[in-house]
Length: 76
Image 1 (spheres, helix red, strand yellow):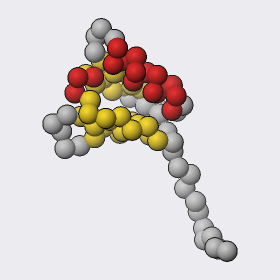
Image 2: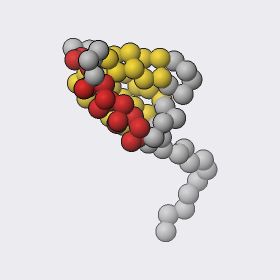
Image 3: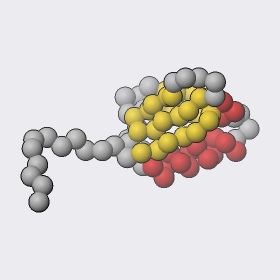
Image 4: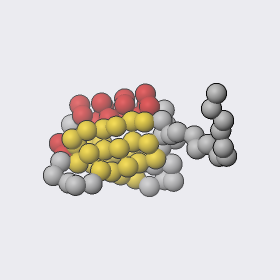
């Protein structure tokens, strides 16, 4: 699954590939927004850690990883 995080006043978004479910990530983001430290702490599927101040988050997009199709398909 991919998580895209828009950062305020930044032209680029942070993209994190995660093996967690969309509900788990949404719960983690929601918890970070309510936490006292004000940090969203995510770890990607390769073990890289991303810590983002929630005050700088513009949006969070949580999307399932789409399967790549190989070959040719026939419509019909």
